[in-house]
Length: 202
Image (cartoon, rainbow, N blue to C red; front, side):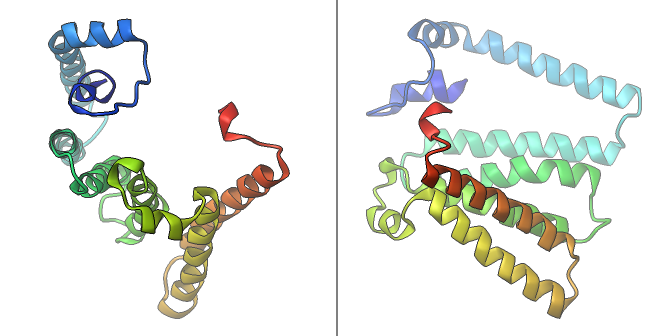
């Protein structure tokens, strides 16, 4: 909501993704909409607490994640430089780590977080960094097409996973998780090459 209606006012060539009437509505009613959303959040947390759906620690982790996410999002919209790549990475880490942090905690060690980190935040940040506004043209050329890069990325991770599992006692879940994403990206890449799938149709 903020990206689509508020931050575009500070951008030279903003990416307009919603109709102008929606943009104007959000701009004129932003605080009201935000108040309703925060009210819903408070009610949900209160109900979770009331019915003991989560422990106090899990609720605390969730609230900390919300706070960290909002702080990172604030700086992500405030800063207008390549530092946005870093703030985007922080946003991704908070977003993808919150669920395992709540439901797994430290019971399974750091491996679940390693899997999440390798599978999502790192590659999403790399993909974000090649946007035109960052002007990293040399890096973008070395990466090539994002679909080809994704196959290479997960391919390298799959080899690394095999090494970690066979030689350092890591869980086989690491191989299964990375292997899934590798196969998925290979299938997408092949379908694109064969013309059976087009990103323009998505």
